[in-house]
Image (cartoon, rainbow, N blue to C red; front, side, top):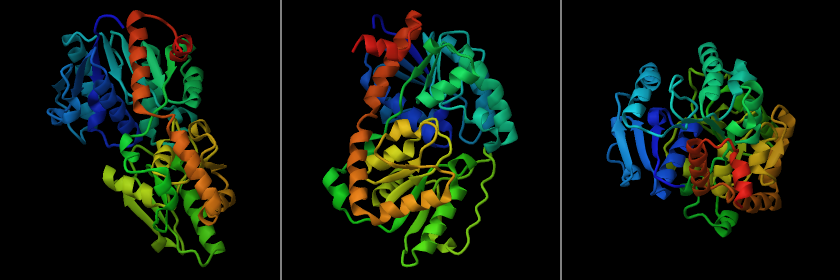
Length: 387
């Protein structure tokens, strides 16, 4: 790559609630600084990150900033006003913002990850303030950035359409699965281990995740199979950023368990012990939970919409997420058919190997090279030419 670059990382995401976007951004940055010993990194974030093992590398400097958890407006102002000044002060060559938001008026070379444009495609799923702000700022950030990175062909096509970006300025870099989901899991144990009698959903409780239809499908399954005692566990929480989710739980309310947010260790245990994971989302920029389930050795039923088919391939049972009967039937099939379950587990183990963070880090390093050198070439074109 030539001389070392000075890379600034917008670390505001480390203080946000750790949903899929924040977890992916963390894994990407932590892997990047672990494998890259050539470039210098300046992590602009909260003071609580000082001294953490993942940032203890000779070429990483944590710059503590006046931002705090649960101070959303304050942190947004910091990102827009103070962060550009800090980037200039530390003479970064590229400012990298990995979690949807970046300083709008930064004048240097920059990379921003935009994970999806759901708030444009389906604005009714979000609060008025959220969708108004994002519809205003995201297209402008996309056009301002030197390079936009997104995580699926579906999201890239949305960016090209709605933000009017030239294709060479949008790089596709798929996300990956945290290595912790693979630990102590092998195919033999996944096929034979004793599981607990529950169906698992992981994700935020917002309209696009289609929780209402999932609950209806579960209730239909239980009605048609009165001997079935399987429960439904929902992990995730609601946010004022999203439109409200109205759940009407009827006769099986004692068998539908809302857990809220859980820590990483507990989440892994829920994945591994579930009979299956159901992810009936209507729209995803990527869709990480199906891959986390596959890495955990658990079969998956998910949607045939947006980016999900390109992520799960043939390793999951995919259905129309708006069809309650089809979703209920698919869940029942996986619960009853051991041969189908084993087939999905085996395919899932193979599919998830395509998504690893070292490959992501390599792709991001190449993006740094292109942005710094001013080469307007897509990452895919570069990789094709250097295969």
